[in-house]
Each structure stands twice: as C-alpha cells, then as structure tokens.
Length: 464
Image: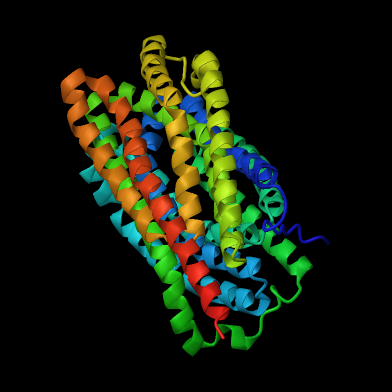
C-alpha cells in the first residue's frame, strides 16, 4: 500500500500548496459535516431550545478541542522538520514521545472537562431552560476526549509527512457513519442531544481506527517502533522540547476560546431566540473557515519541511503564493454565503414555530453577512500564523491569540452598548484584525531571524 507522503521541498510552491490543501479541505468539509448534521438534526427535530442548548456549549467544547489540536499540531511541527531533513530515526522517536505525551494529556483533560463543565456553563450565564441540555451535551462529548486526542494525533503525524489523503478517507468514512447514527440515535431511538453527541464520538473512533490501520499497513522504519523508542530518560528531554512547541499553541487556542465564551455570555443575555440564531451561524462559521484551516495545515507542513531542509527562499515564495490563494478562496466563499446564506441557514432552524423561525433567521443572516464581508482577514490570519509555527516559533502566534482574545472581549463588552445587540457580530472581525497585526510583524521577524542564522552557520562552516 502506498504511503501517500509528499516531499514539499521540491516543485512549484503554489501548485504544491493548493494541491496539498485540496484533500485537507475535503476532509475538513466532512469533519464539519459532523457539526452541521448534529445541528440540523437537533434544530429541526428537537426545536429552537435544543439548538440554543448546543450553542451554549459550543465555546466550551471548542476550548477543549482547541487545546487538543494545539498540542498535537505543536508536536507535528518537529515531525515535519525532521521529515524534511530526512532524519527518519529521530522522526520515529519523536512520534513515540508525542504519543506518550498525548496519552497523559488526554487523561488530564478528561478529568478537567468533566469537573469544570457545569461551573463554566454557570459562569457563562446559560439560561436555566437550556442548562440541562447544554450540560448533557458536554458530558457526553468530554467523555470521548481520549478518542478526539487519538484522531488528532494520528492525523497530525500523517500530515507532517505530507500525507493529506489518509485523513481525508478517514473523515469521509466517519462522516457517513455520523450521519447514519444521528438519524438513528436522535430520530429513531429518541436519545435527543446526547444521541447527537454520541454519534460524533463513534464517528471519531472510526476515523482513528482507519488511520491506525493505514499506518500499520505502511510500516517501514518510521512506523516500526521498539522499546528503546520509548526510553524514559530520553523522553524527558525530547518531551520538554515538544511541550515547548505544543503548550503555546494549546494556550493560544484556550485563550481564544475564553474570548469566545465571554462573547457567548453576552449573547446569553439576549434571549433564547438570539442564542439560536447566533448558534446557527456559528455552525456555518466552521464551513466558512474550512479552506482557511486547510491552508493553515498546509503551511505548517510546507514551511516545516522547507525549514528542516534549510530552503528559506522557498518559504518566502510559498508564503506569497499562499496569501493570494487564500484571499481568492475567501472572496468566492463570501459571495456564495451572501447570495445563498438565508437558504442554508433555514436548514438549521425548526419551522414549527413560525415567529421564532423568522426572528432566528434574521439574527443568523445578519451575523453571517458581517463575517462573510470580512472573510479575507480570517484567511490571512490562518496562513500567516501557520507559517510562523512551521518555522518553529509558537510563542509569537500565542501572542496573536492573546491579541485576538483582547479584541474579541473588548468588542463583545462595549460594541453592544454602543450600537445595540448587533454590535456583538463585530467581535469576531475585531479579533481577526488584532491577530493579523501581530502576525504580520511576527512573520517578518521570525523569517529574518532563521534566514540570518542559516547564513551565519553557512559562513562558519566555510571558515578554514
């Protein structure tokens, strides 16, 4: 069986980046299908209150997922650099160390998630009529944290080696399972919100098993582990280096999520209908961001491999290509949403209560229109942040996350007071813009630093 790995240190950058991102986009579409189908089934068959309950749990769930993805993506930076440098033995040992760290982290996060779910929802001023549903959803989702960690770890390992195909196939299969189980658990068995959450977790198990099966079939030096690869004394040093890459990214995602939770607490003051409309658009947010996150994953791999190979000029040319590709993509997506957004949003909202349907749809489309108009700002954010991370610096992207948190929080707290409840829609836009300012400066600083280091090293090696 082919390994589907891709060496991105050779070839035309624009073509490499776009073609590598395509299967990632497809995979992300199917991954978002989890959330979209859950929301459609909940909103259509369980009503507006149930939709609002899932929405009230959104940012808490996203915070946990963001922490998991932050750690696994941080570990993958080192893997991509070692793959680019063709250090296969060290790559294998890095994978082993990352697996041990991921197992420990998943246990810690599982305990923390179950213990903090109710206090967080209470802190967010979740309305009493939807508190039970929101808490139940989080309880089930957080029970599957080890599964979520496993899939993200495996997907990051494969992507770091240039394999975007295997995670795509895994997600296609899992998505089909999720849709079938959503219908069975919610509409057939009547399990409600818990059924939708359970369907998502079982789908994640399927995707993880497929990735494991593929890695087993491929085998080879990288995936053939021995007891020495898990040596505890070596792991302490290597584990520390991996945590230095993963912790800033996990912290960055957690801080961004806390900002989103503050926004959610403000939204919760506007009533169940406004929460439901806000939730419907937030579910589409995932679709708006699909290509952006795909370009981000691509840039971590592309930049990481080229940094490991010492090809810094390819980083610069790849960055230029990625920015233009990302902007063009965001404009197309924005146009589609502005033209067809109302029809798409209508699929998330129950029509059993016509007044509530119309009011919810108005809120949802206003929010969607605002985000669509400023979508290029978000796409530049993902490309730039991921390029910096691929160069091995996760601290400055973390600072951009803090800037994002501050802008989102301040906008959420003050914009509604200035222009009314619609002001909350601009919290996301201000957050993106704040992060972009930090990232633009950071990119040029980090690129010049690694380029200068490479030149000095080369000059030193040329000395007699």
